[in-house]
Amino acid sequence: MIVAQRKPFEEIKTMLKNYKKVLTLGCGTCVAVCLAGGEKEVDVLNAELDMARKLDNNPLELGAFTVERQCDREYMDVLDSKVGEYEAILSMACGAGIQFLAEKYPKIPVFPAVDTTFIGVNQTVGWYEERCRSCGSCVLGLTGGICPVTMCSKGLYNGPCGGTNKGACEISNDQPCAWYLIYERLKGQGRLDSMMAIVPPQDWKNQVPRTVIQPGYKKPEKG
Amino acid sequence: MRLEYPANIKIIRVPCTGKVDVMLMLRAIQKGADGVYCVGCLEGTCHYNEGNFRCRERVDYVRMLLKEVGIEEDRVRMYNLSSGEGPTFAAYAKEMTEHIRKLGPNPLNKLN
Image (cartoon, rainbow over all chains, first blue to last red):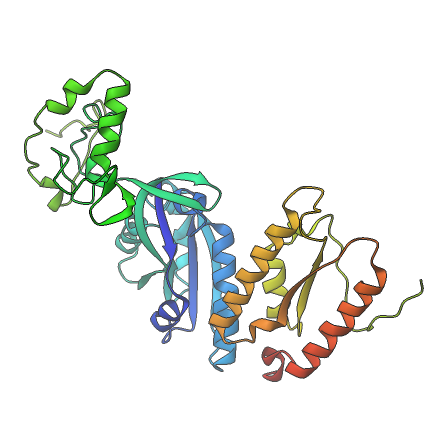
């Protein structure tokens, strides 16, 4: 899932300083699961903003709503009847959701309340770890299910480098060497030969916004 | 025991302090309560193993939120005692009341 962290309160407060009526909009998918921007976090943020603005003698009228997914048009239409009455929207969705919202309502200022951080896993309640950089060219089949782009400090496709040190990375003893882990995993599976495969350089197509249309979902061309 | 404790305290009973949500405490302050404190079982004796630890975490979180907002964080506290400690309950109630009196009214109330 996409993992995000709530922005510092001061930053959010500063963004909203010129507005009097704001809708705080949560997202019920990834950011709700990672406890950053779901229904409950909307309530907490609104309570904070309400108190802070009252103390500043500049009250802020706040609305609260959470859509199932801010990255999906289907779930966004419900907002059409709501957003008109607000001067600005504070979105607690990931960066994709925030942009989609801003695109849908180009005349209303949209502000982010969270910092989208990574694609990760849930180790335990409230504890998330990064696992994927969304590079667009997955090599996990060769690397025993351990991503060298994410887990190696240098993101090396063909490792390890000279900095591997008894299982740790040269940047810190607390940082495991991803390629050491890959070696151990592959060795355990009797697949060390796949470590010898050379992975060609990335074409870094991920530097431009990507679009994916799944097979069977392309709309027929008109004409 | 017929113990007395300050009459200004409104008790909200919950089955376990693990039930106390961040929003319950935050909303109380937002609506004008001068202070909020949770009284849980002694640490290590929770029937549900970690209910009172969860409450402590949430109390700490609410304190952090209040600090961000600009309200004295010490308006929210956590106390622990065993169910057999009536006198301690009364003592904590007195301690909290005196502590909040020193802090004065909730700054949100001063505005109204």
